[in-house]
Length: 221
Image 1 (cartoon, rainbow, N blue to C red):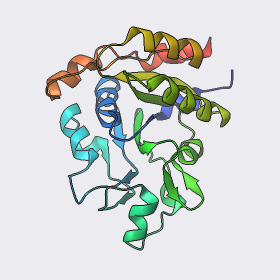
Image 2: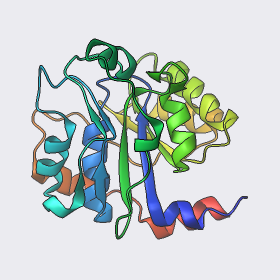
Image 3: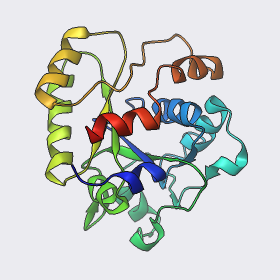
Image 4: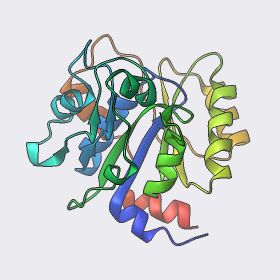
């Protein structure tokens, strides 16, 4: 097993098998559990909403000092490449560098792994560049096994460390069992379905998240 000590000091990249899958909620839970700083480097869709950064700030109860503004923020609810084209902006990889912060950093991606960032970069390329381990957010229901296993395979082909999978939605033990078995990855924690997501809910769920020390020991074994 390669040395992961530097990765663990820096944090985790939260990605998912699709868009709108629960990455922002999971990011808020991780920030609360690990007292982490949050960064979403590529934000789109600001024409329709305030963005994920204020959502995580409010749900996790983060101090402003633990929020890093996006490197790029686009209006259209599209992939960064397409949204940037509409504003005549090309993402500069030189701006997608991990900020230096005290303690762990939770970085949230945009959409899934194969979402285009620029003509020669997708989200999975960004993850590889940043060098962080991944928490993969998935749906709990029908179709998730295929999508999750494909995403795990794509990550591992790049040599990207996967901490585990986070199913979101109604409990489905069968899907979790098969994902853990065929994907050879643990279920990191679960996010059940709620009528409303509040800071209290995030606080309660954060109590089910393994500590970074425990995860490091498990991965290193």
